[in-house]
Length: 128
Image 1 (spheres, one colour):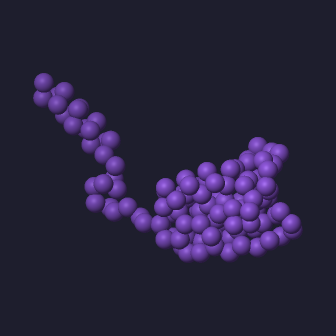
Image 2: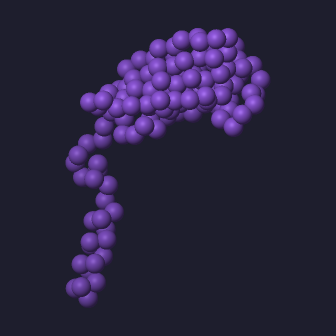
Image 3: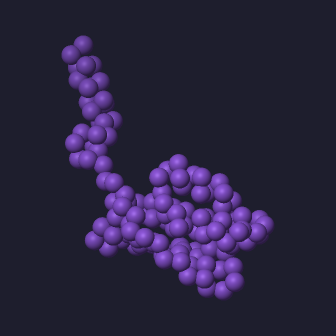
């Protein structure tokens, strides 16, 4: 029985999230959004943040900025064209391009701006 208890304890210890054991979670700090209208409906967004744990967080920040910008312009949809992201010394940056449109654009990476902005707000990610 003693052997079984040790195996059970080892399995429980392996499942503990190290962040909960005292390392402290990193808090994202959003460093700002730069927006550039490239051509008609093509818009470039540059964002920076610290405290991200992956490229996904900084690319989501760019998407949130693009979604809010789309609504500000009176449009309802956007389509992701490309995103370049990098991390340097704890500072994450993303350079993203989206097309914005009043109706659902063609393509696979289309986004409903209202839904995206609501999701961003619920996740605590700032927009433009």
